[in-house]
Amino acid sequence: MTRSGVGAVETFSNQRTSNQRMSRSGRATLLLLCIFVIACLGAVYFVGDLAKYQEIISAKESQAALRGVNDPQQIDQALKQFPSNNILKLVALANKESTEIDAATQRLLSEVEPKRLAKQIDLGASSSSDLDALRQDLKIAETNAATFQPGYIALIKAQRDKVENDARSLKVGNDSFVKSMAMIDGQDTEMMTLTSKVLSARAEYYSAYEKCAALLVREFGIYKVENGQFVFPFQNTADSYNRAAAAMAAGAKRIAELEGERATLRQPQFDRWKTLAER
Image 1 (cartoon, rainbow, N blue to C red):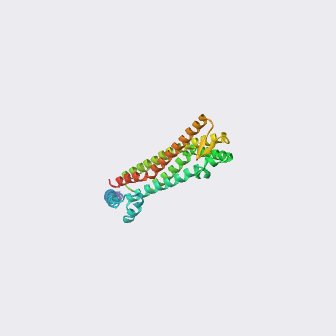
Image 2 (cartoon, rainbow, N blue to C red; image 1 turned 45 degrees about the vertical axis):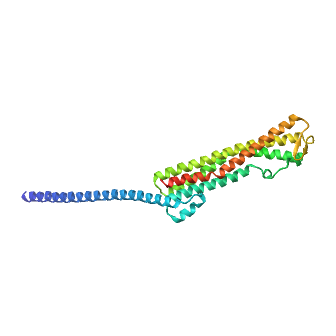
């Protein structure tokens, strides 16, 4: 029985020693874990702080690069000075999107009109069949203008999504990213609004033009052309033609004004982007 008792004491002692060793091991593991967590938190803080520092440097570089740039076409030159500057890359992306949308808008608007309408048409020298063909072209153009918007909006959205993906890949600060996308949305809205006005002016022009052609078809062989002017036998017919011709001239003038506005649209957009870079 004594031997059995001694054996039991030795077993308990070994277990106690083992537990003490496990306790020390656990504390060591916990200590290492704490050190690891602290190191990770420190690294995260350092990375975040470094990102803020890099963004400040990027802002200063962009300010210096854009200080003497007053033309959107010069943005590539500024980017060559600081090729790794993400803010300048954002400005370049926005400028590229604006350029591409402007080109696409012009291409789509040119497709609204049948090719024959692009040529100068002498109504006084046109035959009855020529006038009928002109009317058909004008009706096609008016219909195309009325159905233009959905496809155009889809094009703008596709361009915008592409720019957003490119902007995200730059990994700029969230504040700069949000502001830049808001400005891109703003310039897209400006272009869509202007294009909508152009389409409306064109529709009015096509409608007035078609009325002129329709009246000439109806009165063909009755009116005369003297010194480039139509002479109708009845005043009410002349008045109807003059009203349509005046509306046509007003539409053409409005279209020219809007085209001029489109040509100058990019400059104020670029000036706003310079303001973003200076913040």
